[in-house]
Amino acid sequence: MCWGKIKHFMQKACTNALLTKENLKKRKIIDEDMCHQCSTQPKSSLHALWDCASIRQVWVADFHWINRHLASNGTFENLLDLVLEKPHMLELFAVITWFLWSRGNKVRLKQDVLPLNRVVFEAKRYLSLHKLVRMTKLQLSRSAGMKWRLPNRIGYKTNFDGAMFHDTGEAGLGIVIQNHEGEVIAALSEKIPQPSLVTLLELLAARQGNFVDDILAKRARFCSSLTVSMESVPLDISTFVSADKHIS
Ligand SMILES: [Zn+2]
Image 1: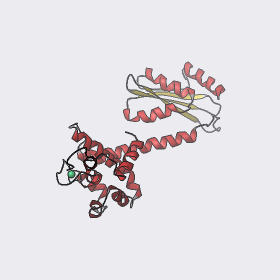
Image 2 (image 1 turned 120 degrees about the horizontal axis):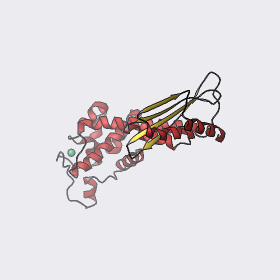
Image 3 (image 1 turned 180 degrees about the vertical axis):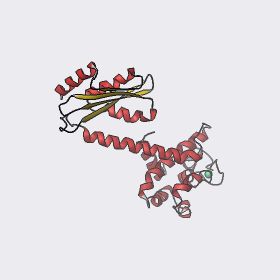
Image 4 (image 1 turned 135 degrees about the vertical axis):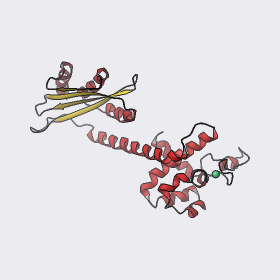
């Protein structure tokens, strides 16, 4: 699932372009438009995503402040206007509606679905991850084009990079710490069996990064879990550091 898809979905919902039963009946593709979950009303976008009694519990905790009477008597676009009274809630609203729409389609196809009482939790988790990736992209775009330079005399310079080992489902992290003369003080290779970091590590690996960190990250494949080298940095790594300094 990507954020672009959710925005596109919201646009379709607001322009009443979703393939709801109500719209399919209008186009004479089906004969009846009754909601199969509550059997009380036609299944419009508003009903499927907000008003159906079968899903109302999803909206209770975070969106209880929306006037349900006003919302139920309008369209999905009117509902969005009500949500915009608290603009910071819009993203969560969009992700929850997307989850509900996907879930409704799976119910119709008799596929396994996320339990209703987990929809908000999973939507918030998705949003947190999305925000983390967005922040990382921003930081990477800010650092793009920066050239290697010596740290000041009292400081150390730290570079890092990531690599994925798709065959084992693990990720590697490489870190090089250098002093003000460019000498390597410490090098670290770590293997991380943490699938949720995959997206971030791929972003890191995709940047125009330090060649040595890249080597260290890939070297992590052969580590048991964590390898830290202090003062006596492995020969293969110190060779690459030297070459990297000349390149930049
Ligand atoms: Zn219903």
